[in-house]
Amino acid sequence: MNDKATPEIVLPRLVGVAEAARILGVSKSLLNRDRRTGEAGNVPCIRIAGRALYSPAQIIAWAEAKAMTSTAEVVTRAPEPPAKRGRGRPRKMA
Image (cartoon, rainbow, N blue to C red; front, side, top):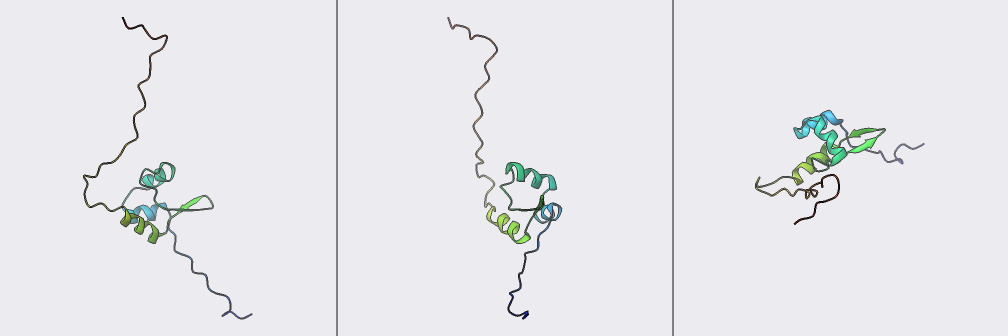
């Protein structure tokens, strides 16, 4: 077989949660929570065999896209649920 006929596949280097957290300067638990809840803004990861792996180039690009010029930007929060009613039948208002 001719080795020159088959193109060489170049895979990106992937790192684990600990190394990705070090690159971003955050804790491992924040990245773990982010995968479940999106708390940190959905840091891009790849799941292989149950492991979360991160591409350093992708997470750096993600972090640069999240850069803010001011900390005064308003963070929108979900509306609070209505207050719970007490037990039993409501009283008549006289």
